[in-house]
Image (cartoon, rainbow, N blue to C red; front, top):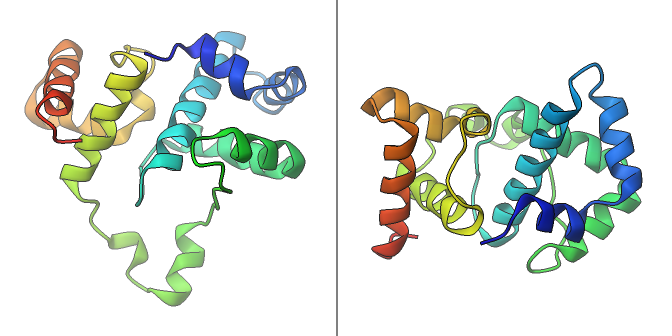
Length: 163
């Protein structure tokens, strides 16, 4: 299992920590740190996974800020699994080529696999973090699951070979 501290040590420079705290002010420091952690988890999962992984606007904002610091972002991408550049594109841009880009359904099975990979790699979703993963929050809401039940079911999926 990979801890948040391990992620920060592997991928985050002191300059970027400072930068994110400045960009995301006046948010409390602990909230900024959680958003950075979840963005790092997302980027690690994205580096290994084909297709879209929906995250919240807050996590997407952290990604946007990282992309703006192009040298730091390039360094990050080289360190991520696979060592390849992760491109970022908006739905509005994608609509030029595919007018239905925003309405595309996201495959629930692939989303469950992504979320299962999260739990397997980083441990269970925590109450202050699940909100950054819309599909996880939606599963809890639609199915009436507690956070513990969500985590147990996602982990069971990975053990059953669904991911």
